[in-house]
Length: 188
Image 1 (cartoon, helix red, strand yellow):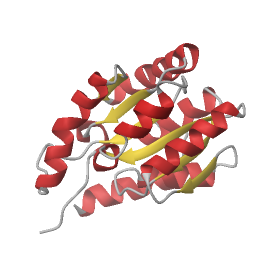
Image 2 (cartoon, rainbow, N blue to C red; image 1 turned 45 degrees about the horizontal axis):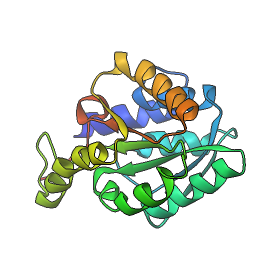
Image 3 (cartoon, rainbow, N blue to C red; image 1 turned 120 degrees about the vertical axis):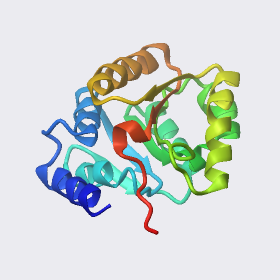
């Protein structure tokens, strides 16, 4: 675990110009003029969140709940500003109503980056249950979603998904698998 934390720490200090997963996400957001980033704090997303806070292009802040972040991004879209929401898999479990009653019917191109928990050695059974229900919920709402596992596919999938969401005015979920992010590390 110490090695993984050292790598994550050095990646954060290198900034967003490197080819880390979080550097690629930051540059892709910027290139697509997505500057408003509300999030619910998450350990896996910490390097991305820190780099977003450090970049003056972005307005980045924590919210209490994922529904709040979706509401903020939805209002921003209606006011002419693009945003994306950062969350963990378990936070996604709270979103079915706000997606079905706001984002989908009002054609909000909601971009969601979801750090995936509940797989690959997960210790929390609750996280595993939510992980198994996330994709069926996305499918039942007819929402585009992609699970990204490799660094070499991240930029292409994120960039094209954002462009499609904006053009079609439909939400998209980009699920960041532990194979990409390294996942959450657990101490024993």
